[in-house]
Length: 219
Image (cartoon, rainbow, N blue to C red):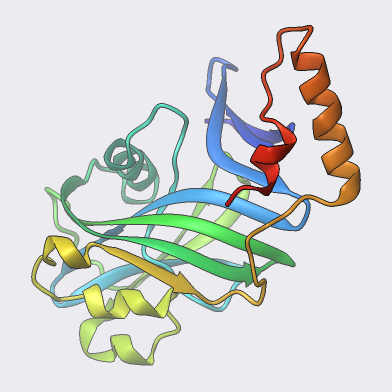
């Protein structure tokens, strides 16, 4: 991946062959929907975390998912850059529906969290910086002592319960975390409803297929 852009509110990245790849992320007004994959990587009683160089909070390492790409393959791809080697992705620990506010946006995120391991374990316990080629943003990766994990601003904070725990039972693998001030669900303004109704009219005589106005009001 050598760059990215926005097209029709979709995030599009470009491969080394300049082929466009669609990310599973889109924006509508002040709202952003995305699907993210992340992994729990523990070695020598330390866990690898990452953060944007402009942010103060930490995340489990991982990243975005491309259209027609599995969450497991996406995690392997995302970790290849900073670690320089392919990770082994193990069991799915939890899928979190995360609602939160950041960067003046209301986020609706699906977060898939896996256990993962690396064939060549690193003895390095410090931090390093990696710049993702598709975002041109620097990300800091750092090994943190598990004994100090509860004193770190790790988001969503519910992932703290997953660290150093046995595989969860199936009835606990899905979770909803709502930290957003937006009451939800999202509804289009009058101008967008008019636009969609016009598209619906065009679909009756053209190739477009857009839901009816009744679909817009359904839950």
